[in-house]
Amino acid sequence: MTTNQRAVLAGAGAMSRKWLDCIKTIGGVDIVGIVDFFPANAERRAAEQGIDPDIGTDLKSMLAKHNPDIVLDVAIPAARHEIVSTALAAGAHVLSEKPMAETLDQARDLVARAGAAGKLHVVVQNRRYLEQLRRIRRLVASGGIGEVTGIHCDFFLDPHFGGFRETMAHVLLLDMAVHTFDAARFVADDRAVSVYAEEWNPAGSWYAQDSSALASFRFSRGAVMTYRGSWCAPGFRTSWESAWRITGTTGSILWDGAADIRAETALPHEAGKLLPDTQAVEIPQLDPADRVGGHLGVITDFIAAVRGGPVPETVGRENIKSLAMVLGAIDSVGQGRRVEITI
Image (tube, rainbow, N blue to C red; front, side, top):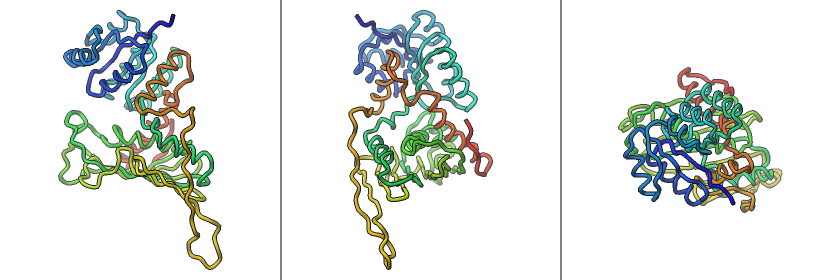
């Protein structure tokens, strides 16, 4: 008879609802405790889910009391390192919201702690689990547009969040752009080695600090990624996944960040013609092995890994490469120059 995993939820804010819905869908996980600075948040989540966990404000004592297999870390970024390190020390596997840490030193420390404890620390990079990105990755990996030379992403929205996002520093780069950076790394199957970035706050912004950014990355095999984004851009909104153009040595891919994916390649150049003719390329369908489902996909992989399955692709020792892109961009903003990205 299979025994359910026991889990403690750290952080009962709005995002925790989606996590708990996924846990319920997957099944086999008992939420034995919820920790939040405001107990009323925890009580509200428990009531919504129809569960009766222990509720408290101190994670360490909750872990000592219940000895869970899993800690679900849905707290704000400033609390990440303390929560993850406390959970690992208590012998729990950890699934964290992004970013995995506030600094690279903290991220390196968490990778080391997870390794020493023999436990998983996995980060929710849910965009990797989008069907469209999996299909694009398949086309790129097949050589369908040749060698990738560029990944160009535009992100323009105007959300009024309220709360911490409207006051935090580097809000776009740290809280949102990490999704696009990680997805670009996934598509290119590569890592960034340098970056130049700028930030600014447009006139009329309702954000206290810079809400807009541009960044130019160089990848280890020579491809360039450019990112232009704003969380203070009314009108003509892009998808939350950005609008993409991926260029290769033989063709290009366009993705609107939603359902529309198109690709084409250039035919052999004919003498006397300025521009070669092009032909459409079919976008591959999903493979049965492809993991999809956004939050549900990554949480499913995490739970499967806890039960002895494969290590998820967003485990901390891999996800640190995406965090390094974000923090490298922030470092470039501060220095006003291109900087090297090291892990």
